[in-house]
Image 1 (cartoon, one colour):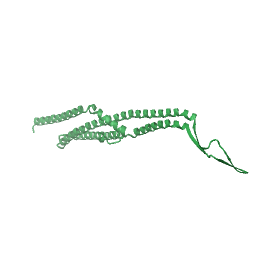
Image 2 (cartoon, rainbow, N blue to C red; image 1 turned 120 degrees about the vertical axis):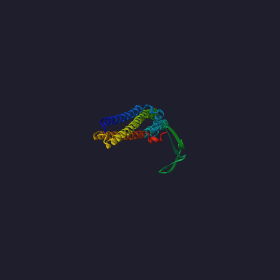
Image 3 (cartoon, rainbow, N blue to C red; image 1 turned 180 degrees about the horizontal axis):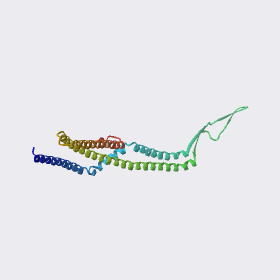
Amino acid sequence: MPKQACTFLNLVMKKGKLLFVLIVFIIMYKNGLAQQSILPDISEDYIARLVATAEANYPQVKSNQNKINIAQSNIGKARVSYLDAFSLSYIYQPQNNNTITGNGTSQSSIYFNGFQAGLFFNLGTFLEKPYMVKQARQELEEANNDQNQYYLTITNEVKKRYYTYVGDIANLKLQNQAALDEQNIFNDVKHKFEKGEETFDDYTKSQSSLNTVYAAKIAAETNLLIAKADLEELLGEKLEDVR
């Protein structure tokens, strides 16, 4: 083959390779632009449903609600305990009271006969009841404050884990596209290497780049699974079940 023909062929091949790399770069650039923000993927309505699910299912929320119920019950008990200051007692006295003496049995008369009832009032017990009611109300207020504080905490935690989850989804999409693009580049380099049009050094570099991209993809998949598990820990159910 004439030297000019060889030179022209090599130039065409180089330009073809350059064009291929340029096309791949443009595709990656466009995909990168499409995923440069996760804000469009954030749904406030869905976050509200996630928070409501966590509030309904998370054990700590249920535990706090039990404390509120107990505190409310203690207020009722404290109010009823006002009756503890009053006590009712009774005795029965027969109408005839026989007394045994040395000379025989004699009968004596008692002013009160039959059943006798008495109502007693303990002032000290009565005066301590308002403090017991006040304490029960303070316990209820504290239980409500703990629950409200935990609502804020779990809302914030659900949001953070949801944002992480959405971010990991976007990152995995980028890694999948990067792996696809790198695979196409490697396939082209491999094909040219087998035809003797590419050096072994370029082939090994392309293979190494492909392995690096796939390792990043696996890491992205792992991060996504962990983020999903962390979010479901708060929800108490599968993410797919939240509607």
